Length: 114
Image (cartoon, rainbow, N blue to C red; front, side, top):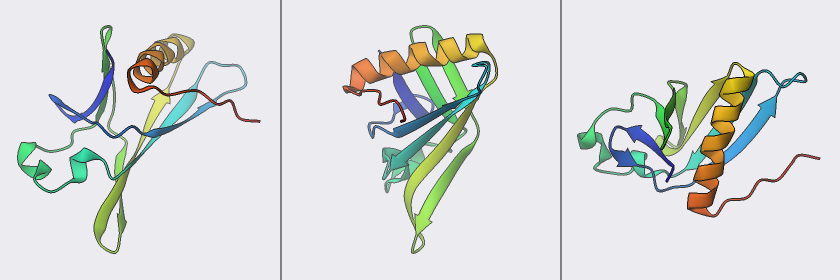
């Protein structure tokens, strides 16, 4: 089982759009997560705690980024964008193992860019 959390112990049920980029030599990359109207910005969530980052959790442990930004429209939160930086081939492999588990848990598919 793989899941995403913004506050420790509270799973995000909104599935993000994820965009991956990778360097030509495959050693580094980025993963951009875009959540539209995630649970974490709904009324009542502020009492549960502060967002400290985005945690990608599975049976191997967790990956984490603090690059988390809220998107506002007319003064109201509409989404969250998070960027996870992948710094080595082993980190890329670990991230892809998480994404495979997360995709299987949430019925997602991968579409390669043209």
